[in-house]
Length: 287
Image (cartoon, rainbow, N blue to C red):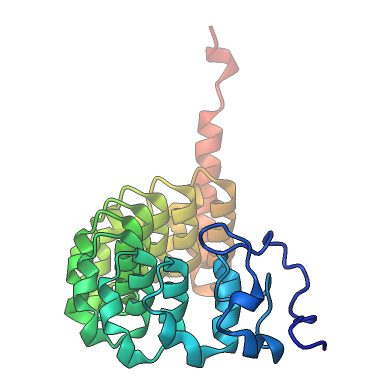
């Protein structure tokens, strides 16, 4: 490698010409890191702390993390965010008050939980998501009323199951699906009446088998299909008359596999046959 050319690093990365954060061309001879450039540890247009492209800044800091502390007060927020990713943890607390949310979010992701509890109330959604991904227990309570559904969703994924009943009526179905996946089984029956069928399907996947009778008459085919897969065989007879053929077939298959239920199945078939016969119009009574 020729000193200073960064030949291996300087292959085109498809991010455009090497310009600094103010749009000016980058000149390596003007950089304070000319020495490491000559060692091949950075390269214009590829791994450069002065570049406006965050990916190039990140490559530089990943290769030279010991320099990150120097850039925590850089005027360009992408550089500060990258520095916050790699700097000494003891230098991070002031970054929680950085004017740029990307920097605050990075500091939130790295600092210990006890230092970031207030970040769940940050004005920026991404910072609150970062906080929700790190906090635990009661510290997540402010997130359940957040206006951004991704903050609530992130919190619900981490929240202790005993707190989840507080979120089971969340306005967003995706949040309620996660509640149904994680809530204590004792609180799950209350969600069998959720207005969204995908939430009810999650409920049917977890509800104890002896409580699935609550969902035998669900209005959605997908929910009833899960019920047909999980409910005890002796409770399946109602689904033999389901309007959907796959559910009828599944119910019949499972019942037929239980010898003790053979007699009841035969009676049901006879009853179905009689109903079909009685439903055929009598030609002599036809007008």
